[in-house]
Length: 101
Image (cartoon, rainbow, N blue to C red; front, side):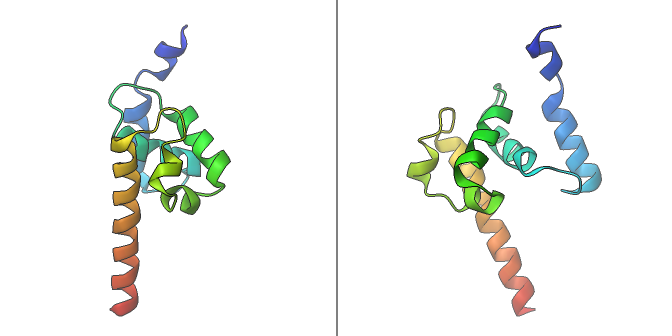
């Protein structure tokens, strides 16, 4: 069986897993992978996610990375950066509101 066939439905399985359990049971690379799929319609993002974690060390490191540095990773473009940065901004606002309330 080819790699393409093995990946068939992979994104949907990740989405279903998230919708069922939130981020419980997710590895950091799977979270980054899900965010990268927002800007990459038909490409496997797992290796790109793992590479970004290798470079930036943590999920927080990836989300907080400078867009210019993110673009240095082969496969990450403007749409991917948008997905990562919107997630960072929403998380920041959510945390700030929780502290205030």
